[in-house]
Length: 115
Image (cartoon, rainbow, N blue to C red; front, side, top):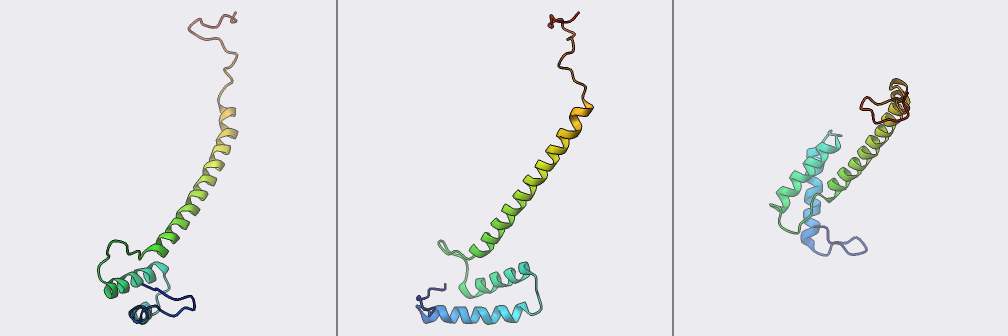
């Protein structure tokens, strides 16, 4: 959609017109909405109106997907940290509650060192 030259000028007039119209429509519709999700939804609606239905090879949601991936990575790191904390807590509490049975005699008669 935004095919530009290195200097930032558009390759085609049609692309510049689409970007200008999209920018105007988005700014009109966003108004006082500060939510990034609301803004993203408005941007997606405007692009769908201007560009028509999605076609093979057209990527519109890259920016949103990148943000989602970063959020998922952060969530995974937080969950991993929580799991590590829980595991260390369990290691501190569980050994003190479970009796040491390493030297105990077995009931099946398999331990020959028992008296």
